[in-house]
Amino acid sequence: MTLRPLAAAVALTSALTLSACSSDDPDPVVADPTPSAPSSSVDPTPTEEMAEPWEEKTDAGAVAFVDHWLDLLNEAELSGDTGDLREASGKGCVACVSISSSIDDTYGAGGWMKSTGWQLTEAGAPSDIGKNRLAIAANIDIPQQSVKSSSTSSIDRNKASQNTLSFEVTWSGGAWRLTSLETVA
Image (cartoon, rainbow, N blue to C red; front, side):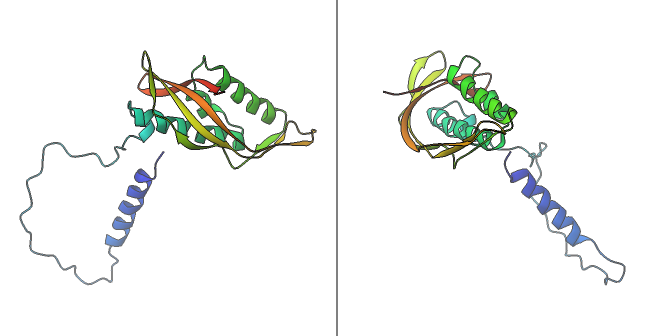
């Protein structure tokens, strides 16, 4: 969700509050009416949101989706909630299922995960691999991670690394999905 609808609601509420009059206010001064431009028969809806970059079926949208998927991974790692991560991942993505299951297992056993989050540092141009699928090679910074696998386990620390990963994304049902994630040798 973006903040545009929230900002519009706050601005509207502020305007309505400021325009309210109390009983001891003097008579309002009303300006002479001026002709206005004719209104169209279709009013724009102020609540329509612009599409996020990752919601577009373009090469740039596919790369933005990879970055968005990493954001969802980082959120899941810190919260233990993998719902959005799983939704953005195809059911056939073995690595995606493994990552989500690892997070679920850790939090389900009373453990936790902490890091500053995976970051996309560079992405190559998407390669068309057919059937609405693109492959994107991307350099990823993976920070040091602390993991407590269960409520009774000790804390493990994984070292930071830089990896090149291949992300296969598929456009389906009006959205990108991560359908394969592999390390590039």
